[in-house]
Image (cartoon, rainbow, N blue to C red; front, side, top):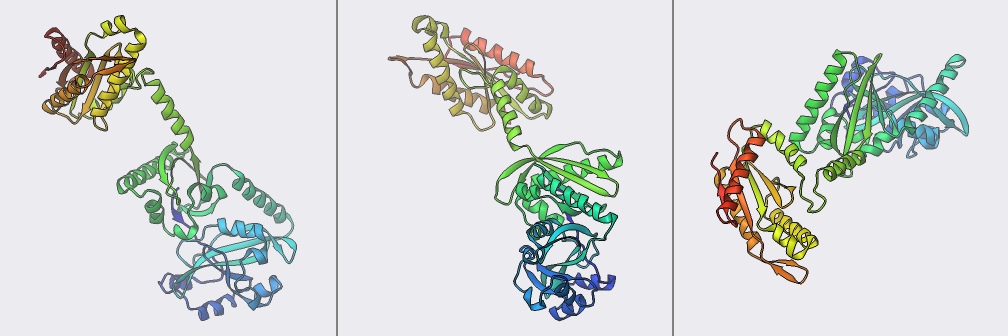
Length: 436
């Protein structure tokens, strides 16, 4: 969600707007004086509750209430619930006192439905952020039809099952639909500046910097080439501390920037599950050979030091012949479980086929890799395998090597396989290291 925020107000001069930027802003007395100088109905509301704090004389006449009759009421009580919902979706958090664009809402004033034209702004009164709205009836004749179209369009945008934002050419948000709040859970008063968004949505500083760079680079490329931004995914933290995978889309249309936010959390999880299933040996749950090579490739490309172990269950054909293939399957599963239990997070274990396995150890030199291989050998031989009512003594032979600079994966696997062959040729149940 691109976080630069917008404001809107009418009736104040540029000098007044500058004054609003001071931390303390206006006093209540100054506010009441100025809003009564505005020749239009004005309501001053709390930022996030939309409760009415102040109203001018024009508002009293417009809504047919005494000025004191507004205090403590929410805006929906005087302008209708639909108007309250729409007012809550119009962003007004850029520098206080800035003049904003009018927007049209359908209000309910004294039980009469009326199309209203509204302007909004953030103002600071005695150090407190408030929202100021001016109301007028929408212009008559042809513009009434336009007002109806705008109102219907806002309803359509709120119905959309994805987040939708409209920003001006300075990337200050003018409108955010209902799904934006549903997706992210943040209220307007929590997102006063762009930095508020980055801080809340990306709490991890490193990931935050990555997200910023990604957004800025993709936006720049799209605007330079006058095209839709290439969609991309980011992991976003919501207000409820849930992490969602959001696909970001953006397009500049005329003087507006359109941002779309699609929740693809479920789809990406399903894709990951399918990839895992496609890359998993169904019998043992270890990786299969293809996935092993796929996951090794980026480590090799990045030049990360790796060691490779090739393992083979000794005399496995004899187990199948003596006890049957079902018992052999149990041995394979238990062998995989013991190996996985001895490995670190980030190590990769794969079944290459039959009784042959491979292990990839990232950021490991030859000596620690040999020590790991010895621990694996001991874990296999150290306790009999329970197969039905029989206790089987199972051993493994292991070949170990490390990648030399510039070597391909095939070359490393071949050398580890040669070391495994030597371990079996020289008596089995042992580790042989190939220096490379």
